[in-house]
Image (cartoon, rainbow over all chains, first blue to last red; front, side, top):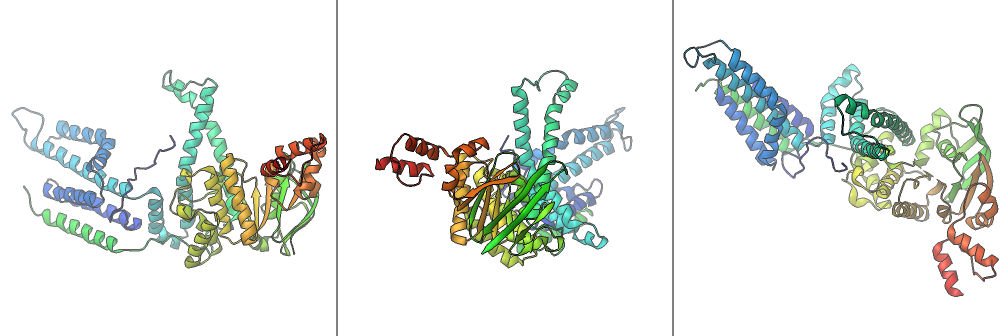
Length: 267
Length: 273
């Protein structure tokens, strides 16, 4: 359990990986907007989005399979919405005489499927190329304007990064507690779902208590290192806006223009 | 020069059972002092008092003439007295080594360029300069604890307090941390206050303070302390095995030369026979 990598970050040395995380988050949002801008049944716009995904995947040096795997998580949702469209969309003409599947239903099903799949692929590229720590950093940068309304951006960002920092520690701890309870005869693998859920209580309670103890010690350690909130604090980590970010912006602008342009053509 | 002066320190957590009952001691600049005691002797309380995490119920403690426990000078004290705690996992804030070391200087508002220098200095002082971009959760206990020391060193403290910093480490990790601390003491002139319950760790100290039930029972060089074997045993403390063997041999009439504090001392003395 020790080598569990949380999130799905795929480390590589690429132009996409080295981009500013804040820019990457914004570009991902722009990409999703582009996917939604594709007018109904103008499938060429989707082709442009797919092309963008393929290009980014190549630039990021990520195997295609890794990106495609992300669709697995939403496959049920995709199939359900497609089937519902096929069965219940009564617009248009039936595909065969007396049939209940209409041409509009079929197109809508395909359209919705493409939209969801492309959206997931784009979002996956963000999490594949950005480590959780960088993501938290990017979110902090983007939240910065909220300082104007006195939102504690620094504190929020610190909470996020401490949470990320403690994930491997708590996984280790869970592992240890499970082993300790098993050594005393605890049974986690048999019985119905309620029985199994109940068996987890002797794991969760020690975990919760030790988390409080850890929090207490961490607070002391932070105090000892002169932590006093965001006042007068400087920031060591710097994520500059680089050439790759500029190219990213141009690329995404190109995609949006392309989608708008292709919205004029119908197959 | 006296860097730390503790006068009549008295501390109680719950107003009934005092954790410290009138402790007096001084620490010289550049000295390596070990504070030893069994569980509940008040040694960890003392560590917390040294940098103002706790405030003494009675008595005073000063560092470089600054009174500890005054809210206004709290950060002045904490800048001077760095504490490394027992559990390396519970004192790290960041997921990347250099960010972790940067945390202290960031809190002080040190400019970015200087933080960079401080990170390089602190990491090379603990011999971890090659791990700048590493993830602490993948390092060994000894390495993690050295990172924790680097995190404290980045604040440029004059005094390094180790609150049982080796208690959770394996023998290898303990060795790494102890030799790092000794090096800092000798080469950088950092005053060290090492709190421990391992007798082996006090052999390298200039001076040892033995605490029991919140009171200071002995103070002296490691050699002087080890002579009080019986008294130590009554306090639940054992002298190191090498010291014990040397003393037993002496009692049996074997002529052991010199002062035996460590295993290598013992080996040398035995070879001379």
